[in-house]
Length: 530
Image (cartoon, rainbow, N blue to C red; front, top):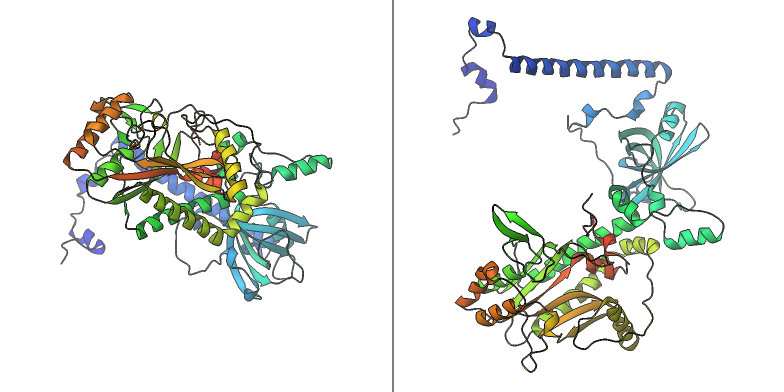
């Protein structure tokens, strides 16, 4: 039995203050605190009085005043559970005809038709519904219509009304029913003048170009303007689709690997030395010790394999301090990383890659058609570049070479998903295993989608002495990775793995032209906010 005193009984056990204690003057700090409490109480009372006065005045001019208005903050502070049920906009259909519903969403468009009628389109979760406010005796007043037309775009509102089914198709909303408004309340006001309009940010380049040819000038929202006002930009249908697809990519990745007996791990992002080598590393001071942000979970993935997990994967942040101002590079992105034991050949890893991404793409095409359609309306697919590129057989592929190869593969094999292997060792990380028959090449591979590299992987070096030699050859200070190399001294199984950027998967699957479109809040060499 608990010895804690019930709340209602506590005062009975506490010693009441003595008369001397009651008469003792308050300290300055306590007096200030009491004054602030009194001021707040007075302010709350003034607000309540003002609300009561406004309600009384409204009642004199409009007997239906309680059916509309701005919600008071106090009513939104989790004051009580009323039992009311909100219906999601996406669930509104003709099966609810003549039923009363309560819905919440953003005011996407508002249009007055004289003084007695107004149309509002409410949006939530990528779905929209048209709501109609029409003057009707004892139901809707002119003042209510006026209030509705005065709501600013993107404000969050609650509407109670009756579902009706029109005889004609509704072109301006996703749901083919209407809501006849009986009550409307503004839950949260948006400022009247938005930095960017959602309608403008939702236009495709084709729409803008076609309007220009017709002599009409439409607003085009540039990339920096979008990113500076990302909270508004991500409300567009295309962006809602992009990040819902991104969510599914992560889900499919995780579920597939779990079904293949992989273990999800979580590795540190503060490490002592560069995990990939090179200069593209964010260095920092860690309590007086030199440290850096992990360029990948590579070292700890391999240590986990040496720790007998057999098969591991991770979804987490990756940091690259490279000055890349390209359409496909970020300084921070989300890595999808895999590592696994192999029995005799690194093609076992390729088998996982192949089945994983075929499963992923099939699932996205099957389950995300609505999102893909929304993206396609704003960002239709563009063809690859023209031919005419030479490739250095001992060098890495640059972007133009990748695109050219992708075009050739598409023309010959009718696929935009393919794998290249046996890359030159010189262009791969220090932990990559060389080929047995030619040490100038490596047991490595890259996977391409739409002519651009999306996945990089390889068999890893599991011999500690050879690993140390390779690290030194790549200019890595062995002291910074000593615990990593030591983990191979206690018996390390042959293994391999791969890594892929989540944002790049979505970018290429959706045929987008810039990775910043698939990063919720992108970090590149010039951007640290929002």
